[in-house]
Image (cartoon, rainbow, N blue to C red):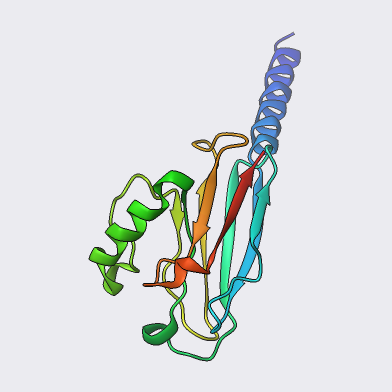
Amino acid sequence: MRGYLAWGLALASLIAAGSAQAADKLCKLEITGNDLLQYDKTELKVAADCTRVELTLKDSGQLPVQTMGHSWVLTKTPDMQAVLDAGQKAGAANNYEPVGDKRVIAATKLVGGGQSTSVTFATAGLTKGGDYTYFCSFPGHAALMKGKFSFG
């Protein structure tokens, strides 16, 4: 009887562990910026079952980060301009991102021509169908380098 109980508990534990792992789904996205102040995508979509997102930013340009650096920053759309303004004050040393600003959902570091970087973030704080925008935080770039981020 004890053997069956132990086996049953072990099986239940394995099933629970498998369910927990299945519930954690990493979705991968990729976007490329260039020296013409353009991302190659104007919209990024993540399915509602994604619990985490890994975003990879590539810079296909030739220019160095100090001249034409690119980043990828995600905020709620109404927060974008305030985050950009605060980022300008934060400066290049902080990737033109306001340090510790809770309005920033996710952000990469700045990269220059031929470089890439990634950021992984949880979707738990996102609202399905919410209004989100991604943009480059380098001064002046967000006017052209921005897009819609859809969750759900």
